[in-house]
Image (spheres, rainbow, N blue to C red):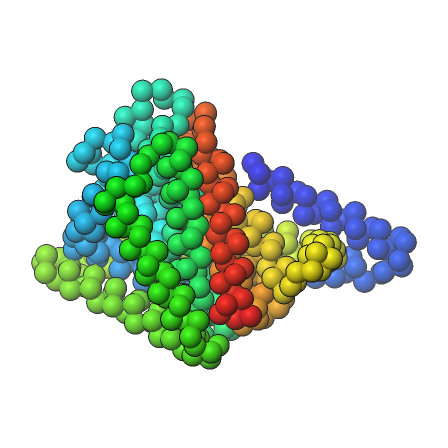
Length: 410
């Protein structure tokens, strides 16, 4: 519903501004420019969607191998001590723990379309434990905040979009996204725990969160010792090595469990094509809306207004061009994806704004969309503190993304 209003607003605002420019400024080129943008952006959206087909098939196939090879179950057992403390109201050994982990794992690998069905399954199992069916429980809210904070280890789709848009090193945003999404997730966990009075000061959680903070601090310190070119080389190398390592580990795990790895891959990869085709109309719709909005001059007016405010306050304005992605992300994944593509198209995939828009895209998730879909699937109407916790996690991710992008690419 929110995206519906946003999409309508793109066209109405564009039309009004175009009329003003035509009547009061004599700009006879504005309406032809708007119509040309509809054709150009429609073509761009279609080409991008088709370009995603191969990579989506690859990673959905690899995920299926990992699932059948028992990798997911192994990691679930490892994380069980942490999950029992983050979700104290879930009975120990309840199958929902496995569903939650598989959903989080899919998000961590950047496979949004694989994560959604797993998340819906987890919500159904959490609803079985819910004594008040129309009200969100604490485990439901913690689970959704973990989703909305967007913890991502491997932002596959973002790297694919960068490759599609001609980035010299599509993986150079890997480490920045990892750092930004960590701060978003950490903020979400802390805020939600405060609301729910979950005690994070225990040996398991202190070791887990403290260890993660130490690793992130070490990464930040290590990269701070490098110049920009070294940062780019190391970040890209780490990303590529880790991606290849995960593929090999999943395949070896499948072989160890006597899984027909090839058939498992094909089974998972079949969903890649249908997923890529499924997103075509959504991407066309949002890119056309953004294209019309930008061609009318409305986007430039918005960005110039924010830039003026930031400059008046004495701040650096380089980040402002990427803000539309950050503002759209809590509302719509496809909308933010369109903003990200538009930023890379307008400023260049390897520009500061282009890279920052990608980091924004990877640092948080679609808060309102996730709340609507997940709660709506089980009939929950009263969301309690879910929106507040999700938006605070988003804010932490945005602030972290800006700081980290300046560190790496500023």
